[in-house]
Length: 93
Image (cartoon, rainbow, N blue to C red):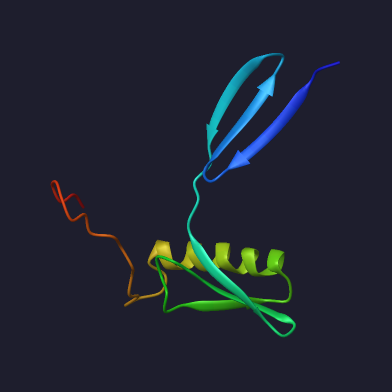
């Protein structure tokens, strides 16, 4: 019988199969969320002006994924973004 374990941390998933490690990069985006009464509210950290909601935390996450797809594809015009600017070193992007 094959022994498998899965560990997920931030954007890296590690799977051990018969003492061999396989690394799979799973992209991730930051989000901020909170519960207000029966609803869960949140926004993607990169797009703080665009909030969404869900009836549960899992439902909110699904809405956030849909929102990310729409916002990052350019389907919604004139969207303000949040980014980080390095204070030292060279400026990329």
